Each structure stands twice: as structure tokens, then as C-alpha cells.
Length: 100
Image 1 (cartoon, rainbow, N blue to C red):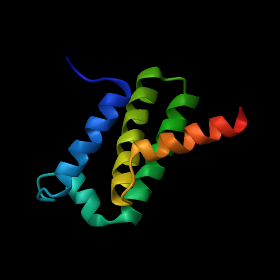
Image 2 (image 1 turned 90 degrees about the horizontal axis):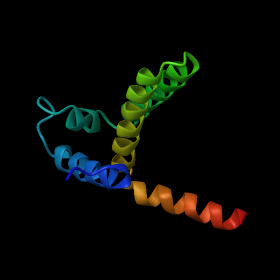
Image 3 (image 1 turned 120 degrees about the horizontal axis):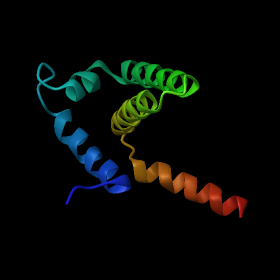
Image 4 (image 1 turned 120 degrees about the vertical axis):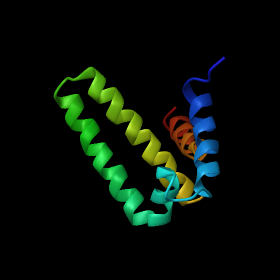
């Protein structure tokens, strides 16, 4: 059975961690991590803009595709900073509790 939702994001974090040690010539993830935080942040920003533009254009598939790219690059940035999606969801949960 394939993973979906948060389960897949957690699995993708593991895949990113595995690929971090791969040859940058054969792995986009390894190459991106090798290029450093600034490059990863630049890619994240580009994907954020592309996601917003696709949403404004009301293009459902492009919005999904760009949002997927955005999430992937966010996970790479989090890995680079030694953080994970559960760290992010913990902040969101604590904010929710503070607002309740």
C-alpha cells in the first residue's frame, strides 16, 4: 500500500536523507544540498512564486505540480538546516493551542 499525506512526507524526508550522501552527478537532491543553503533557499523561493502564479492563473494541475515542487524543496531546506516536517507541525500545533 502506498503512503499518502504526512506519511509520504515523512518517507520523502528519509529519501532526501539517503540521497544526501549520493553522488551529486547522479542525484539532483545531492547536487542541491552540495550547492548549499543559499541555493536551496533560492529554489524554494522560485517554487513559491511559481506556485502562486499557477494559483492566480487558476490552473489546477500547474498549481498541484508547483506545490509539489515547493514541498520537496522545503523538505530539502529543512534537511539542510537539520530540521524536519514534524518540527514544523509542532510549531503549527503550538500556535493552534495558543489561539484556542
